[in-house]
Each structure stands twice: as structure tokens, then as C-alpha cells.
Length: 101
Image (tube, helix red, strand yellow):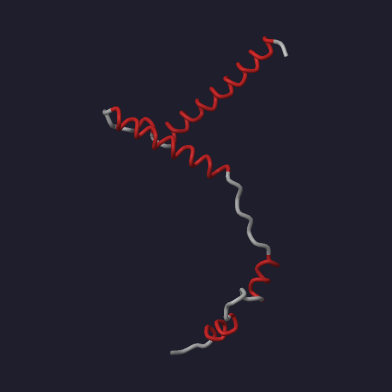
């Protein structure tokens, strides 16, 4: 690989990272109040920035997580028909079916 190709690949990667950073700041300003902090001390501003970006990256992580699959009808019916091992499923069902004081 030529030196110029390596340089162009690095520039391309840095440009992509630049956009990700820009999007992070835009989202933090628009949705999470990055500009809304009223602190004046450096430590409090640092804390505010950290909380905002932590919330942003946590929210992005939640969006990227795969959704839990809902159980199928067959799985639900199988759970209803056979109680877990070691439990008194029949006794539990019969005691719940009784009505009155």
C-alpha cells in the first residue's frame, strides 16, 4: 500500500469520527440541555458535561440494544400446562380457585 493511500485512509477515518463528535454535541445541546447548565465553577461545569454525555451515550446504547423477543404461543402454553419442578402447582391452582372467606 502506498504512503498516499495510507494517509487518505487516515483522513477518511478522522473525518468520520469528526462527524460522530459533531452529532454527539448536537444531540446533547438539542435534547439534553448541554447549554442549559448555569454553573460557573470549573468542577461543576465538568460535572454537568459528564452527566449530559453519560446520559446521551446511555440513551444511544439503549436504542442499539436488541429488543427482547416475546415468547411464542407454544412457549406460553407449555408453561401453563406444566408447573416448574419442585413446586406444588396443582395445590396452588386448587387453592386459588376457591372463592369466599
